[in-house]
Image (cartoon, rainbow over all chains, first blue to last red; front, side, top):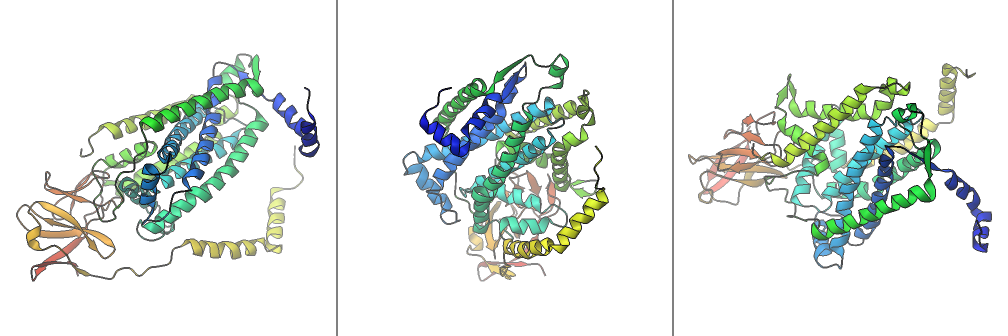
Length: 360
Length: 150
């Protein structure tokens, strides 16, 4: 390729030629499951949308119980395109969690966590946890009634943990109750601590993906491996780009036709309103807690439920370690079944959460 | 490939290095203040054991309920369909949402996880594991006075 003098100048200083070689070497295997390779990049793109819109929101948002709600109200009604920026932030968050789940379960079902990609899986599961924490802390920031009660319940769940629970509760809330102190803490987590954690985990995650290349499913490998591959630059990247541009279009439509709502300002001395519910990705847990009786085998029902979800999360994290058959390159239908059971449970409880009358 | 250093050897080397370089001490001296910093200071909890409400008994209709401030915590005052005044802590014993009186059901209800409590604050159904804390209600000089049970 012909290069100009600027390219040469930069190459001598930062080594562009090496990067170019690296980019040209990267290939993506082509087989009937290739479609799933796009969801990681899509999640990354939506995360970048969050970073950009989040920074813009910071220009108007005020993190205190007295001003938070009013500052968002001002942003939504007075600031030009304020509604667009906030609605895009809210919708991209939802889409990002969705594509993250799709990415996670596609990796789980295609058993892409097989050696040597265990660390890629671990960093991915940690990133899921960080994304959920982003959602939970961001939800409170407008300081409205829904967010207030979601945070009361969500942090109260911490207190269920034996021994360390009350300590964590105080640290999270910045006191005994959910107050302005909680809002300030959640703000600090949402805009400083979680972004830093994301950058660290994401850097490792992407480095490992780069190092090991794309995982090819065992079934495809057994049928003689992949015969075809496409260069990452530009073939795969251009396809990625189509996906990202479509995502921007979808975001624009969602933000314009279904702008983010603000609701009522939080009142710590008002009853929780009927029909209260968390973000959709917490719905299956929320609905489970509704169904659990007050006591199971002498233990409080919510303790059983929360420890159960904790165990499920730990199981998910440790899948590469537990699935010895997949590690040896053998079929492991048990883990596929567990994965399906998880998806079915989440879908069913989410469906019930949105359809069952709140008073039943 | 067999590594030359045995696990014990590596562990000992790590411990020797860790202790002799005082990395441990350094970490403690950094992490201790940070962990104390993150723990919010104890604020003086409201020690009020009695509160006079702004509403008069005449303003509280039978078969209704309302939230009042008991120090920094919410309480719920209800007048039963038979006309009796009662008060409880309004914090649900399940996951700390604020409960409400449901005139259609004639008892206390928590919207968050569908917990039901009877007119004595006892958990009837749903996930709440314990009854609501009970307060004593008195009427003095046409004002409602709520106090914690001794």
